[in-house]
Amino acid sequence: MSAVNDTKFKFAVFLLTGIPGQEDVYLCISIPFCLMYLILIVGNSVIPFIIKTDPSLHEPMYIFLSMLAVTDLGLSIATIPTILSTFLFNVREISLDACFAQLFFIHSLQCTESSVLLLMAFDRFIAICNPLRYVSILTLPRISKMGLVCVLRVVAIIFPLPILLKRFQYCHFNVLSHSYCLHQEVMKKACLDITVNSIYGLSVAFFTMWLDSLLIFLCYVMILKTVLSITSNTECLRALNTCVSYLCFVLLFYIPEFGLSLIHRFWTGPSPLLQILLGYIYLLVPPL
Image (tube, rainbow, N blue to C red):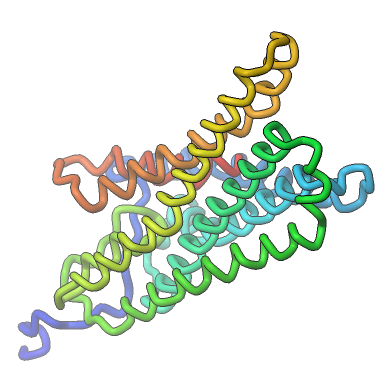
């Protein structure tokens, strides 16, 4: 009885959630998820393979594109097991260690993707604003070093997250609102004060997603300034055309990410549907 009454009982598992109230149609819902995963896994595997095998594509823009595809592929693999097990087999339990590992990979790959998007913005900035030095600035060795720095930055920043979570006992309601684990949600289940985790989580978001998005914005302000100074309308449109698809992807990536982060920290509404939908959008739509 003392163990039952102890409010600091440590849960052995968390329970994942698909879409509340739609349990009867989970099998039907799993079909589009399976199709989406098949498409994004095949597509994001083919892209780096083609770029690697075709020497004419060994250019900075395509190398950054292959890095983005590999990151999206890793993000999909990190989330596939729990999402499909929830919808296909209604298996909702996930152990603490597995949950911590999953959130580490999800946040690491999300931050890596943000870093790659920043590199792609830098690539467009050099190509449009300083085209004569493009080849000398973005050499293959320098691109490799830039990619390595991005990965090391992400690992160093994200690695403390599961360590900070592992020191807690979990006594609050152990049902998560997604079919995967996120740091900003798991930490709320802890019995003790989570101020350190909350501050560190916000610091991680600031020094990765928010800082990267700000630098991307500054890059495109300078790109737009350069493009508008071009007298020829045809050349101006051609320069802008190289950036359109990238900007659409950036909006699809950052808007759901920022929205989900704000909802988890400040939303007190009764319905979790909005955060569930944003959660699937920010994980599935950009890779797709």
